[in-house]
Image (tube, rainbow, N blue to C red):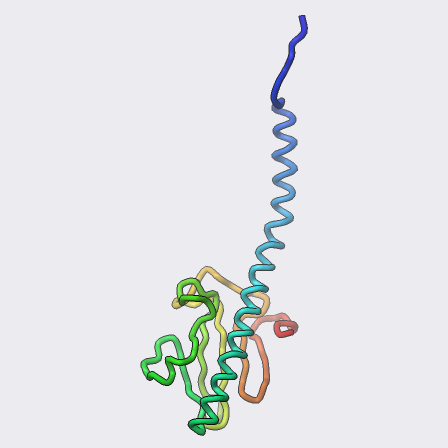
Length: 150
């Protein structure tokens, strides 16, 4: 009498699960790094867009306009204070203020802060941290990586 089996044995099933576990442990960290990089590029593009709008504002009003997510001034509310469609879905909070030691009419410093209380606080960018752009064109980051801007 021969036994005809259909289906998988327990050993075969465990082997497949082990392979899937190994592939997942390798792929997931790479996937999350790519997500952080994509969000960082979104923040950089948003900073460049806001700086262009600030330059237009400067040409019309002879001064830059400080802004933040909590701004009540209608002129300050023109500037995007987050990078996504809504603050809750955004990875970075944007704001702008006078460069240190300079009046707002002469220089503005824009900041993109990752994962604040007013945007998606679960997001973090340990490689670059806060991104900055000022009206002189200087780009910076608070993180340890020297390659945060392309």
